[in-house]
Image (cartoon, rainbow, N blue to C red; front, top):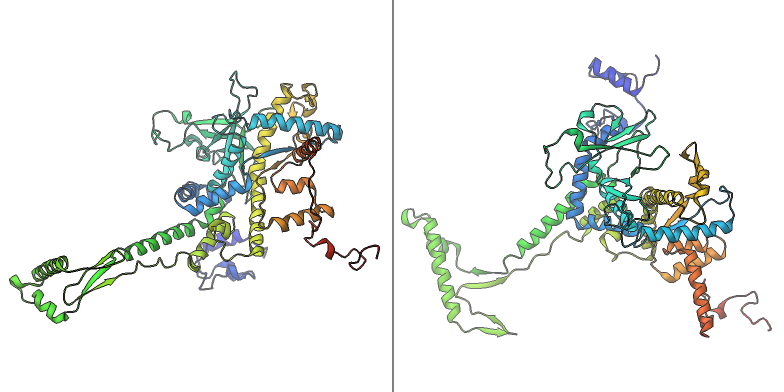
Length: 564
């Protein structure tokens, strides 16, 4: 028999409807995870669906729950803040790196181009006027931080490129951030196979345009069913201009083939995160309840005597209910009268009453909130940390059981995740904005190192070519990696540079600095020290790279002086 695919076998199974599936009769593979007769996993038969069918029907619910946790769960909110602080930091710095050889230039030109472009771009991007933001709310660094934060809860970031014609603007390029909820398929186009999740594609799957709602579907003062035609609620925005200039900026990490949209990484752990939050709430409520009664008064009267005085079993007017009320009222009145008239002791200013005969005072412990901070909650928080891509120590701020080695290992794992997210989201968006600005600056002849007369080199048949890519190449310096033991890590950096395993550019970038600016500042400081006759006293008693005292270093003479 000709080999059949799994899908064909399942179709035969559904048609035959026999107790023993045809696919099983023909034999099964060697994977225990696919076993159908195993009682432990016999009922585990997830549907085999496309990436969009798995994701798009549940995306709204997943996004809403993730954002709810971001608003109301301190750990999740802290994890999102950790993403922004570890990837972007306080200043997202351009490090222009044009491929000067491809452009037919030399290194001297590249240095001049880098200096001019970085200064002019930064002036525009980080201006207090917020020219880069169409809504004039964020500067460039603020936009990148916003993009990273949005991705934590939705897995994607969306923006459009605008061209405001305001006289005060030297550059018209502006970025309009858009809530991804507004990216959706118009109701009149639901059955158009070319449109998925609001994105229209060509036969190869490349995006052509985006359908963006004019307002959020559940916006304030804009409920479902508002007046207006369906066509007025959506606007189709071309993905690019005819010459290649981007019009829609959309970034996400693709995890499956034919995947159109994305959900947050934390979607896989939403259930556990919600249960963790509920666990903390219930545990704290238990502690509060245990602390409600600070003290109780206990009577030593025999239970039988108490019930007889309460009139238990007497019926009529002497029923248990009325007897209990009467007894409690008279008893408490007697206690109150006795205590009020008694002589009280004072211990450190605290009044201790002389109690009614046959009673004693019991102080109740407030009750420790069992579980909080213990192994169970730690295991839950570790799951939350994995869902957010950070280490448990950084998420919980709990370093009580952490030594230097484990802290470094945790930081290294977080750093690898943050670097990948930096490239996929932060760098991708920053590069797009930089390319948009650079194209405008060249065509407006605002760069002396690359005048508008050379702009034709950047287009082939009226479309941006690889020469433009070579000119717009850049790195981005974001948040510093951070140091646990500055001495050890500085020594390691010095050794890497000394033996050619790294460069000053790489090591300074780890500290969130630009090497060219650092060199220029060092040169200025050196000249100023010479002008003012200031000498720095260097301590040569210890090797800065190894930390070993100089007199203990073996210079090949067995520790003896060279002239001995």
